Image 1 (cartoon, rainbow, N blue to C red):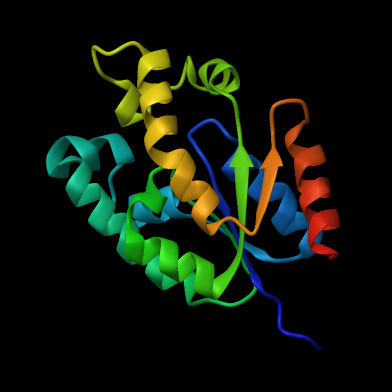
Image 2: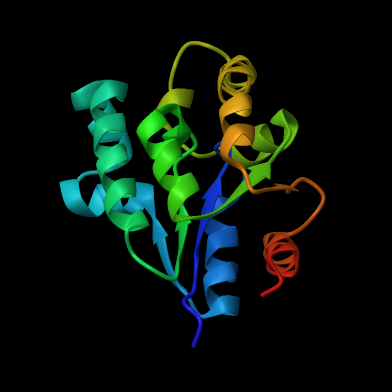
Length: 172
């Protein structure tokens, strides 16, 4: 039997990486991992707490290690955190160890999907959410595109439809 390649989902917060990852893993019979959930499991604390105590830099170091560890596995779907691609090491590992799918999502959809979510540390600031998301998009969009093998828009489709589209794109 041919070895299954990893599928890595990247994109901004609110893109649907975790939900789409769930559908992909079920459809393809692959194990699903979520880097944020793995950080929470390893630390015994939620992401917001890690941000509060260690700052973004401390969180990113943990994220880099978790993604390094998980990306060494075979035949997985990995939903990454929106800022994971900030690390050159993480970008290199994702590119080298699997198929990278960028879930492109407009700011309007991100706002709608994250407006009630209090667990997103980067949105817990005085800065209006639209400005935060726009700034993050400006910083991260080129990095997402740099390593993406495929770009899939998520704004007009359900998570299940996006997962189906990814399966078709990958010919699986």
